[in-house]
Amino acid sequence: MIIGVLTVELHLGEAASLKDKRRVIKGVIERTKNRFNVSVAEVGEQDTWQRSVIGVAFVSSEKVHAHQVLAAVVRFIEAQGSVLITDYQTEFL
Image 1 (cartoon, rainbow, N blue to C red):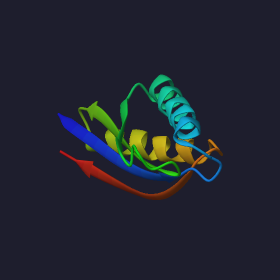
Image 2: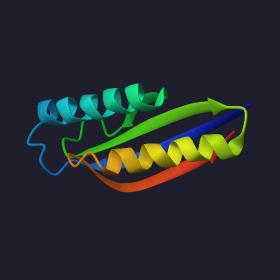
Image 3: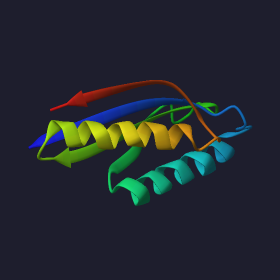
Image 4: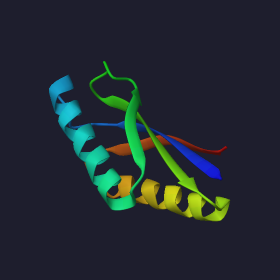
């Protein structure tokens, strides 16, 4: 069993408040969960209104498959337009 863990740092340039940020992040998280059947949560920078860190986890029987899914998640988040990825890390357990 392989567990793929993706940590994504985001910049939300259009967020003018924590309320705006929460709305945008909630949408990104829900769309990502629905599209890829992964676990997603905001794991850092909860009190900073233009930054966020989200964590994504995926379980697979093969490392290659987990890597492909997490790479697709990164591309999907980049395509959202409402957020900018400033950094990301992928780990496999």
